[in-house]
Image (cartoon, rainbow, N blue to C red; front, side, top):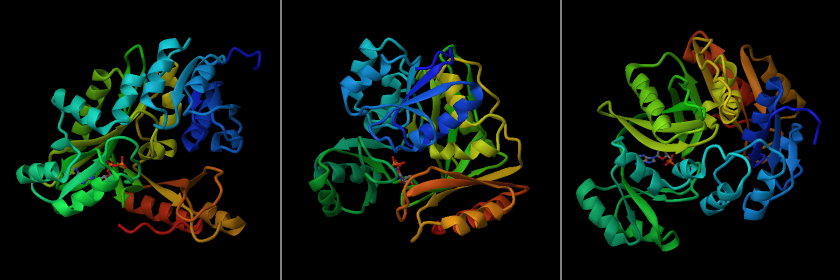
Length: 380
Ligand code: ADP
């Protein structure tokens, strides 16, 4: 432990989000320490300090919170809610976001119930454990329906669209407790990133347009928002206040065919939908998250460009090598962010942000740089 009086942010998990939190911490003179069992985790490789331990261990979480950090926050959703509540009860430092808030991003049934009780628009839904219950739901809402894992799903793993009772029974055979939802008529998907600090200040970035392929986010667009996108940002600011958010939160919404907003998913942490803020806004999501959890004044989320596009870099058939990196760096107005992770086909290894005078120009640059790194071109 150094003698400096710099604030120390403890991050549970040392993946790419923790790595980019560390990147954001450098300019603020803040120290980031990650709880991770892997000395080669993405954050440690970038120079973040590491506390050796498992985020699945209640004892390790408690030891981490007692190790001299000033606040505990998260890289992911993977710690058990019970462990986080136990941690909160004994931790000498604040847990931000609080476990009760974080649970909204960890348990889809709890989230749906909380948001609908607050009068917010969510898809019609019900917990189910038998095909007959899915059939009864479909009798009201129509086939097909969406089945979802209540906990533990991500990147579309844990989401099944089924068109009859037989298909529902097949899914329930290996995942016996699920959420059933109406299939929303989606015109497009958007995401709003918002930050709130404990003393109450709330700031949201403009809504981003997101593209999902097979449940995986492939592209995020930042451009001048439409009125419905402004409404989504307003709704998200209100939600951040209502749930007492501390830190950054991502809210994913559907814009329906008839022009309404429906809340789909939320995550109380920096998020793939917010990576585009790194090169296009006054304050990016990582610096903002650090400011928020340390209860420092929030930065300005306003865009500084006309249009920006983020494209994820997924592993291609081979590592990109020096030539691939060189070709990506040739692309004008594109910024490459790599996570230092070992190459594997289709693994999320980084992202590219590109800016431009128009969305098309920015997207073309981002795709060209990602392709130079071997990333398969996303089908849209
Ligand atoms: P995950 O938590 O795995 O990312 P999501 O709940 O975000 O899962 O769902 C992944 C994708 O599946 C969404 O981005 C959307 O494209 C589609 N989807 C999810 N729920 C619905 C629904 N009720 N109606 C229509 N499409 C849905």
